[in-house]
Image (cartoon, rainbow, N blue to C red; front, side, top):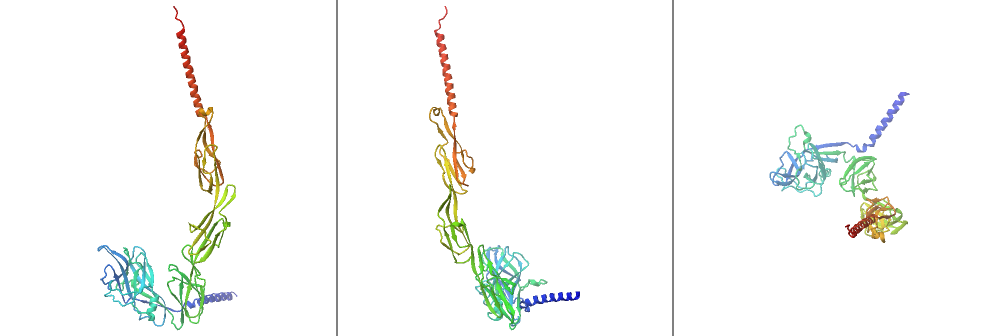
Length: 499
């Protein structure tokens, strides 16, 4: 009984393994990899346009500066591989041109590969007589700012054209993406003449991967349209991720004849903020040779922010294809008084942070959009004072700072005490918990967090009266004293002298 259970489990495991193998058999057609070394190579240098560098042990590409001669220039690499020894009647899956970087640029550099359009001879070629090249690049790659690393270019399309006889094989030219006056922006690679010794990986090489013969397989080519070259999309075959590729690359997948498969690509690809690319028809079944083009359309994120939403009527926020027309209308009045001292006032529409000069009835989606329709809450400030004239009463936006003032700080009283200097003086402002700064000055400010009434507080100032009375009393005392002295003197003069 125990043995039967073991056998049953082994059978289940075997079936699982076989199912996995069968699932991947379509992508497991026998592959052959062939490595070729260049038949000729050289580099051209604009700093020395008449010099030929076909027999040097190194190849330079990029932008550089000759300190000794104070000249700027750019270098280009030309390299050709002989394909006549490749096996016939096969399908080329992928081809990589690999060079070994022994001298690195100061920063990462982008190098482009172009198909050469005419014959050339490494012994005599220089910058002035370099052969013409295709106007469109075959591929590009980034060379890192470090040494002792391989750098590769995918030139599968060119090798396929040479292999099939569609185009003559004049090789490949490699140049920096932007030729300009920049120093320390070039790479040095070993050429075919360099004696690599034990370092076989240093040799320039072309790595060609073949798969099957045309009689037993069929090819499905996949392209994508509508995507910028800075993005990649993912190809899935029969539910399994196959590869992520750039939209400027044509991908070829080889299947056994007589088999059917489901090929799909990414449905949605994120771009910059608020941008995405959508392929609605991103899945198809294949059973024979076919060329597939999956088209992507751009969509933009539209966000409506309505304050409050009861005052507006718009389309819903979300993703919309380019050139879609959306509704955006205001339904509320310009001004509504919601309670005593409180009102809402229409502020305006803001499109991507810019205030619109007119109200829209609709908007056209031509990029990411943030549309804000806004009402502001305003509170009334009443400034009171029993004395003087006040300024600052009025409507203010919620949480804003309102300034106010009274035009005087003292007032003389009328009547007898007024004549003696009695006056009323400003003391402070009252009526709010949101004053800014001190409250004891004639000019002040308050944060408007609610309807507010503030009032100036005044009080009687008797200090001048007391001072006047003191002076008056002192004067009376002095006068009285003087009168007493005068009277005494008179009496002393009128008294007769004794005989």
